[in-house]
Amino acid sequence: MAYRLVYHPAVLEEDLPRINRNLHARIRQAIDRRLTTEPTYYGEPLRHRLKGFWKIRAGDYRIVYQIVGQEVWVLKIGHRKDVYEVLPSRLIWKP
Image (cartoon, rainbow, N blue to C red; front, top):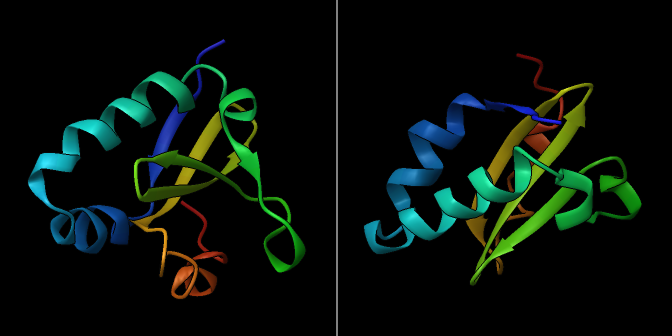
């Protein structure tokens, strides 16, 4: 079963430009291979106030997403040390 990817606008405008270009391929590969096929199998559910959201790892980077029907909403891509700091402002987003 294929899932459709939907990106938060800030992922494309803010997150990706801040990441070293050498890592873009690794992150893109993680998204394309894992999130479009089996996002619950490859992902790890988040807990506490982020319950209902998921993450996958791509090296030191985390991709935070939510599964809505047949869509995977990619909400944040960032370094593991600070990816969760700005995430709450993106949780209310609806495409």
